[in-house]
Length: 101
Image (cartoon, rainbow, N blue to C red; front, side, top):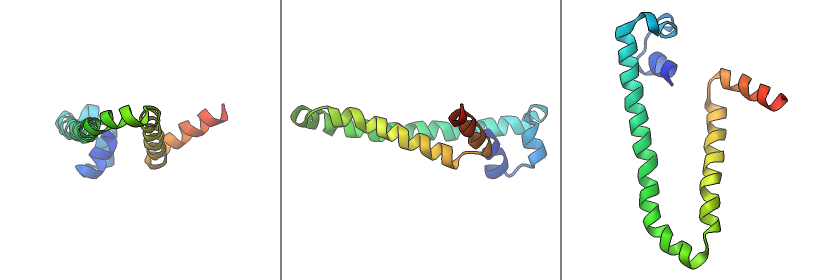
C-alpha cells in the first residue's frame, strides 16, 4: 500500500518511492496518507457490521445461526481472492510458490 500511495496517490518519482528511508519529508507524507486510508478503511468496514448485527441477532434466534457463522467466512475468502487478483506482481509469485509447495 505504501508504494501505491507514493507512486499513484502522491505522484512521487519511482526512485524516491523505492528509497523512502533516504527522503524523510516524503516518507512522512506517504505515511500520513497511508494512515488516513487505513483509518478510513477500518471505519468503512466496521460500520456496516455493527448496523447489520442489530437486525441479524433476532433473525438468527428464529432461523438458526449456521448461515451467520458461514457468511463472514465466505466474505473473507472473497476478500482474499480479490487481494490476490488485484495485488502487486510480487503476490502472484508468492501465491504460485505457495501453491507449488
